[in-house]
Length: 374
Image (cartoon, rainbow, N blue to C red):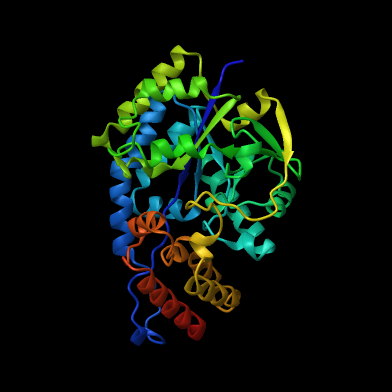
């Protein structure tokens, strides 16, 4: 049986918080940075969302998308035609939609009831907009452990995605489909091959540069297993790796080389039906797909993040729940990270405040106003 390749893309934008002065606490309850959110969304839509979705559709490349509720809200506000482009791709039959938390939040770490509510809210918007009922789930940032798998199973999903991390992949080849302890189909991200595209594609100091389509196809052919799980941010294509790097040409010719070698791009639902399930894997500690350590440190690794997280948790049901849920979006804590220099370079790229300390002070000021206002 030939290899399959699963392209899974995370499609997300947060509602960033505007620079909020301490002097505004108690007086100004307008938290969100509409100008910056519009600017970033419209740029990413022009460079990535529109051309990449059109490209996948026109070249009949199958892929799997999880589109957050906060992304959908911004698309409807800033670029409603984009939703129609995505609808066209979904209706082609070459796109599988995946559920996650509506707000791309970390609530699975501490509040299972809230987690279920946010998953249901996401499911509802996907059904309403795209007339689609997902069977696959991915938690925010691929955060996963055995407990998460049981909750997701009880919500009715059949498959869940997570990171293929060390030391797990020393025992379990990420190119097979496994079972979780709860009985879900479990797909592990092939992080080496995924990151070859998303992070190293245009890195001239990388020994494998340039990454050509025929070279990457040869790596797929030589990789043991059934299915290569290439999980990436959607913005890899056109935004993080600009069109000038040749990333779209790479994808076009990769599809040709894969077709020639009888390698299919696959929907997750089709892959879990086709391929045999291997061992049951237990993952007791939380894992994620972020940073080198693949754990929760990108959001909870320092005292600032933990203080902000605990304060945020304490404010549930203390005010407008919609706003509180926007504040739970994982990006806010991600901006406060102070990790290794290599990891921090990625954090700084996304941080609109350019400093984790400013991000922390800004977030805490907003939380203080939120707690006083309602």
